[in-house]
Length: 322
Ligand SMILES: Cc1ncc(C[n+]2csc(CCOP(=O)(O)OP(=O)(O)O)c2C)c(N)n1
Image (cartoon, rainbow, N blue to C red):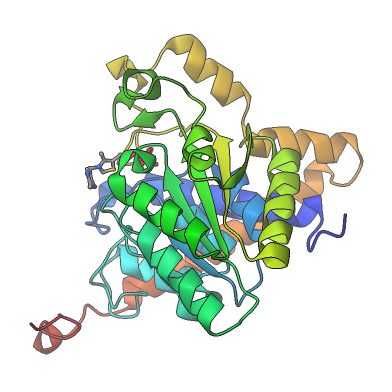
């Protein structure tokens, strides 16, 4: 298969995302980032594997947990960190915070925290793509909680009936805040919500980067060839609390054996070990990569520190008027 990037590039992408989020977590208590943060630590393989098959011109849509998607698609790091600090150079001019990352140049159209609300936007963009006869893909990332919103079903039905080039990516991390999937759904197989709309689907371990990479390739090729929607369920796990920089397993809402199973199935550690075993990467090269990314990240935080807050005179700008 002719993948755009090799596994070393994909690993670098995942590692960079992890280091950015770990730095956010480390600095969060300093209170310079005053927005809520929903970290994707543990879930990076999905963003990196899917983005490996999307071009810059393809569009993506995301949720409150959008850092990994934004970075993997090529979103500007300085603008992201400034946005988290509420600063004027942020990607939303400091008005949106962590849950509203976008970078039109990189094809990152919108990230929205109202669960499910971004799905019809992605489908709407897929309709635009169809009407303009472009050969692009509109991809939307959402959690297992979002598939429980009625708007997912209306959007999926519309995408199928209209033959729209949209990729539905359900990141099943088994929880909607503190409520496990098995208390909300009769089955962990969410692909039935694709089947019921006659949409083609796949499901795999979202922490296994080689599977994510292959399945994303298959889905995106199918969409480009057939102008039809496709649905993928990736099973994964978030390492930190639902919202915030901490671990919260002392709350006991997640079973200890489940937590340790997923922590041992860390996509980045697994891939690093594989690359080292296969002699594609050495420990020393890995250390150098980490140093390079930490430098870049430190520069982004300095940029945000030095950036100014939006001018109060612009407080009414970018507000819809009815
Ligand atoms: C319409 C709506 N209902 C409730 C919420 C509160 N809320 C924020 S995140 C979240 C959980 C979403 O779970 P999921 O979609 O699985 O994404 P995850 O946080 O696990 O990545 C909820 C219920 C919301 N933001 N929007």
